[in-house]
Image (cartoon, rainbow, N blue to C red; front, side, top):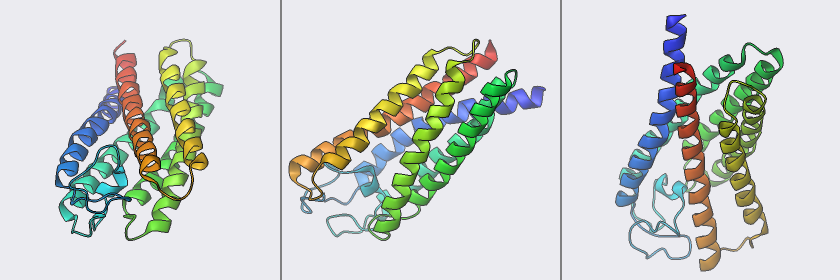
Length: 228
């Protein structure tokens, strides 16, 4: 039992570590980004409101210069982030073992989340300047499966009397932000304008940081739940 509990505590702490290190090291990768945006290849460095996270993972920057340093940092930190979610996806259903229905819902959410992580890793390993079609396909599959997994986790938490509903609310906020981001991408014209790029890149930052903040909070909640 002690080994099992220690493993679950590790999973809770690892999901906190993953987003924190990602925020830090993507900021470092931004410093080394070799420049350029989709509408202005001559822009210097990383423009926070006009570059995407995927730009950090390009082998060649939009300026045409080698982006190997930023690419390496981004790829490693993104893979660590992806890996940090895997133990948590296995651990979370164990908090609902006392209720067969809640446990089943959480298990389904866990399975879908693991599938979404596979798509996230595939997105990271297919830089969009080299594998543009595959990169976008895997990114969209990650967003879709990730949203479905979040729904199942939120339902399991919501109907558990011992697990604070606050954490279901956090899942719900993440889901709403993800839906808004997806709708905006669909509504915006396909051709990229300076204004459209700013909207898309800004919304991606909001969506991505919301995702990180959500799972950081979920990790803390799971760790606190085990302590109590």
